Amino acid sequence: MAALFTTPKRNDTTAGTHVAEPDVRRRIGLAHGSWRRVTRRIVAGAVCALTVSSLLMPSVSLAAEWVKVGGNKYNTAASDEAGTWSWDGADDLKLNNYNGGEIQAAGKLNVNYSGTNIVTAEWIESINVSHGTNENAELNIQGDEGGTLSMTSTEDAILSTGNINIDGAGSVNATSTGLDAINAGGDLAIKGSGNVNATGASDGIRANGNITIDDSGTVTARATKDKGIGADKNLTIKGGGTVEASSEKDAAVEAKGSLAATNASLNVNGVEYGVYAHKGITLDHANVTVRASKGRYGGANALFTYQDDIVVKNGSTVDAFAEGEVSAAFSTRNDRPNEKGGHIYISDSVVKAIARYVENGDGPIPYSENQDGETRREPQGENIGIIAQTSEGVTPAVISIIRSKVTAEGDTAAIFARAMSADGKTIGTIKIENAAIQTPEGGKVIDYRKLRDGIYEAGQAIGTGDATVDSLYIKAVAKSTTIAPPEVAKPEDPKPDETKPAESKPAESKQNPKPEGSKPTKAVAASTTKAKTTGVLAATGDTSGAAIVATVLAGTAAIAAGTMASRKRS
Image (cartoon, rainbow, N blue to C red; front, side, top):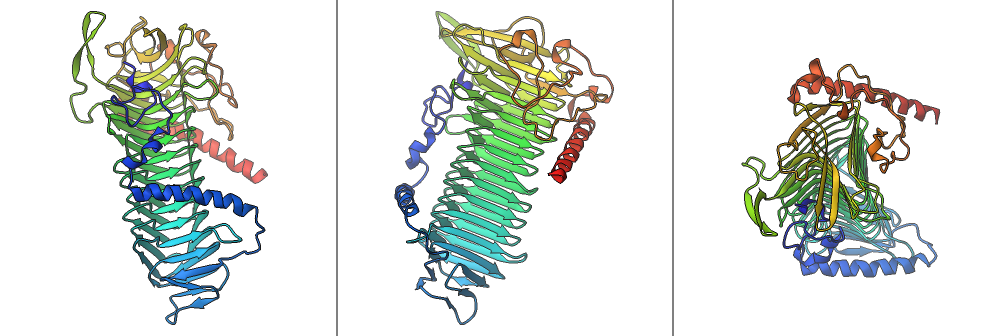
């Protein structure tokens, strides 16, 4: 069966059985939102056109051209008698225990808040900054520690047709009962040490451009219909804080560009996808927990990228779980010759990747199938812990595990790399360096080859025995595996700017060149040697986790020290 390895499509009659553009879900907006949302998207397109024309105009203003507070419009400096708000006639609007209606402006507006502030609006945004005659929209929100800005609306709670910047140590709470909680027509940046809570009936947090979260506090994004966090370009998370994202009916996190999480925590829970990054996922010294439940057609991917790679490195800890008839905890695939991708690199980290048909059930239900006059029984569904796949014309799929503890489970297979080609010469490979397969007993990297509908599927899986297999639904293919570095192995220190670990060079994988920017490492225990680990790390299960984490973190500490030293020199 190959259902798991085709690009998902929301309106397929069978989950994952057709190849389609990864963003095809955007074409069925009526299934995810109301006519009001569709109309707003059309208006947003018109606004983009106006933006282009406005760039041709001279920018003679450096402030808001006007503001509206509670429905009243002001063209010059103004304030209320109680002192809950004041506008200086230029950039700055100050809120101090404000409790009132919507706030609007044209051009650039800085909202500085202190005390407890509440903005309530119906059928209009709570805070809305649009392009002015002479200046593009820009909304900056900043508050001191102890300050709170809470916005509730039936439309977007916070909207800017340009960029949005949220900064400071205060708390920003945005709730939309009809559309998005925070919506940026340009880029969105959240920084500082404050907390941001965004709850939307549609998206929680979204931007037509890049989203950057560089915050040491907590950013929480919840959605009912659409994405918890959605970026039309890249999503970057850093700063030592925690980002939590969830959706009741869609992906928790989607980036049409790449996702990079560095020195931060990311906790997500989505439907069909936990994290869907079209152009790669990089987790660098990150703590990630991701869950994905089955979507409308039964599919679920916890961490998924299309046309690029998944990279986990530098002491990251990742716990990924997916539940569905067709599911994967880690999944990357590529079928385009002009795009890189289809590889998974794990180094100096701890990873748990589990894919189930049913989380607490008895597994797949067998069924009968007639093909060429034969009747056979196979499990219904494909559930693989870690899967990488490429098609002909693309650098073959590679799964690389270096100096890391990896626990992978799947009702169909634990770990699987597959390349598809017309001549069968391209082979997906699994590389294990400075680590050994602890379970299953006698576990090794085994070969897989199958001719299906005129296309060869060639790759490798974790399993037992010496024979090449042509099915994943057999005992020789491991459904659960633990890979860990030997206790005596001291991790070599990768360069601070190393993005992908080096790979071993078995004779049969000359078509799998080393990733650019990597350096050679010495293999302490490769899977093909059938080496058995002795001592504390020979124990199975999580009882050996503390020792493995200590080994991994020893390398991480050295990496961090090197990074800090390089920063001081620069």
